Length: 108
Image 1: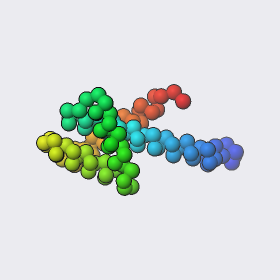
Image 2: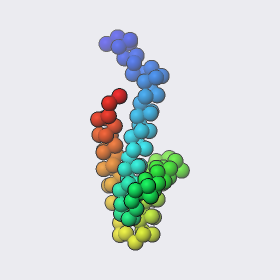
Image 3: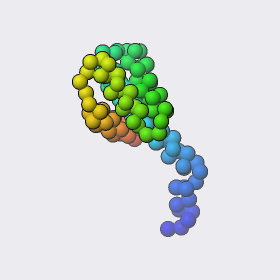
Image 4: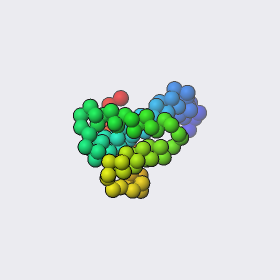
């Protein structure tokens, strides 16, 4: 394999695309989790969408996804839902997989 053959993998533009894709998956995962939680909170339409975005923006507070999990757990508990942090983390993994599949299926 020649260096020019793998150059596209290390080219700065390729790294930007990879970073953008990773950020896109994370954003979609957070929105999907937010919509899932919004349904459990009884929110619909624009209210559910606004809540989903608030879940995504919670992810900007600290590195990692613990801030997202904490927000959703707190909101669901305030609403009286019986759910544990472990269940939210499981749901987060499910939404991660869905986000990856959705973005992979979209045309470039």
